[in-house]
Amino acid sequence: MPVRPAQRWKAGRLLYGIIIASVLGLGTLGVVFAVGLAIANAKLAVERNPLVDKILEALPGVNCGACGMAGCAAYAEAVAARKAPPDLCAPGGPQVHMALAGLLGVEVQEKDKRYAVVHCNRTAAKPAVDYRGLSDCNAAMLYTDAIYGCEYACLGLGTCAEACPFGAIVMSAQRLPVVIEEKCTGCGICASVCPKNIISIEKESSFVHILCRSRDKGAVARRNCQRACIGCGRCAKVCPVDAIEIKDFLAHIDYEKCVSCGKCVEECPTGAIANFRQMRRRKASVA
Amino acid sequence: MPSGLHYTVDMGSFFTIIVSMVFVSNFVLARFLGLCPFIGVTKRTDSAFGMGMAVTFVMTLASAVTWIIHRFVLLPQSASGFNIFARFIGNDTSLVPVLKTVSYILVIATLVQFVEMFLRKSVPALYESLGIYLPLITTNCAVLGVALLNTTATEEVLTFPAATFQGFCAGVGFLLVMLLMSGIREHLETLPLPEAMKGVPIALVCTALMALAFMGFGGLI
Image (cartoon, rainbow over all chains, first blue to last red; front, side):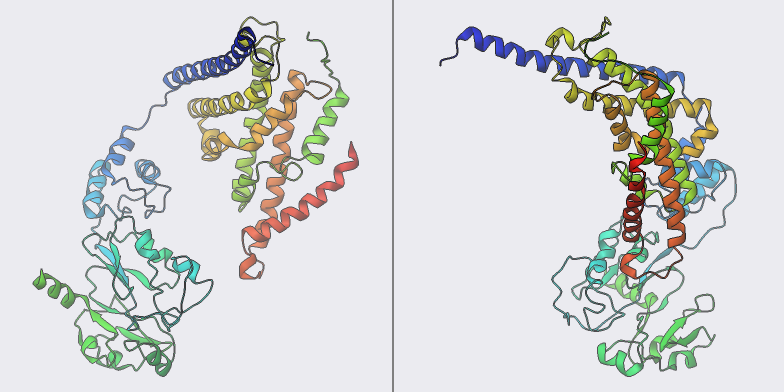
């Protein structure tokens, strides 16, 4: 049966009525609430410490959480309330620390700049395991401990590079993370996401690092990786300040004692120790 | 007074509300609403208590305000002058359930914002102790749930005090379960559990057992 124009008009009017009622009604409610909130905001405005705004402005605003607070705003409030020291902002570095200290009228002890050091230099470039899951180290850890043979080695899936808020980590052709020191702020996010704990945050003034975390016996470690620390102890013997100690077949450097002389680097039979000062010079001469 | 709806208020019904909201149809364990804060904020007792208090507070206020909105703005039978919807759709109530959900979210979000401003100005101590939990419950489904339940006309419609009280009791039920769960989870932390069961998995197992236990209250009313 054909619908007469009058009927169609009636049905249409009801439909439009519903739409108009909903839009107008909810719109009106929304406007009323918005006006109410605006008035409340003006009437109930709390005198905010102007220092908080100044501090917030001085902070880099990346909300990385390296200071241990929920974000830059939380840290600014804590600093203004004198509940947190002004030198916790890792991304900001000395400049921001000085600025905050200036705002607060206090002195800060200048901290060394810190950056991330990757303690793995595995030689195996091809995976020993055919892992085809999520490209995330923590996900891979559910299936296997060792993609490249050594169970202490970097899994090479780039979770650290992904997590870095500053783009300071790139994955090399060997699928090893490379820290771009100019960009690294030492915030420590990469170290906290790495399931293998092979990234640590060290002072810029420490140049010599053990690039291995293998606690396997020497022979096993060597079979898995040409550049593994085999715990032979030659570095510990040659060290003039006794800064190296062998624990669980792995050399540990005491950074408090280390003078970065580099003798251990030359002595190491596998090349598991690196001198970052030389590497930096080489980089500088190339550039 | 609209025909077909009759109002009841007596002490018996208030007692029924307490038992029903706190135990029998507990929001977390029987209705499965508000599970996100339930799992997220029950790691420690003090934060669970803060969240529970904030939810109770907002639920009570939201129940009161949404009852007023429902009665005087949404329902076409209302005799009040400022009914917006009835002007366009007459006495047709079929739209009310749809508009209810949308307008309640609006109301609750506004309310929480307002309460936050108010507390910050007037009761800074309470504002500090509620902390982050107050803005977190803006979109908590348990708060929307209690508002919708209050205004769902079955055979009888709740009066204003009963609706507000029901909101309060729902919050108390939520607080109770939050405290129970946080107590359990603090003990679970020290247990030698298998790696895969640590944290949320074992918490959900405990939740299931608690829900079973709460089913025992079923015969009370």
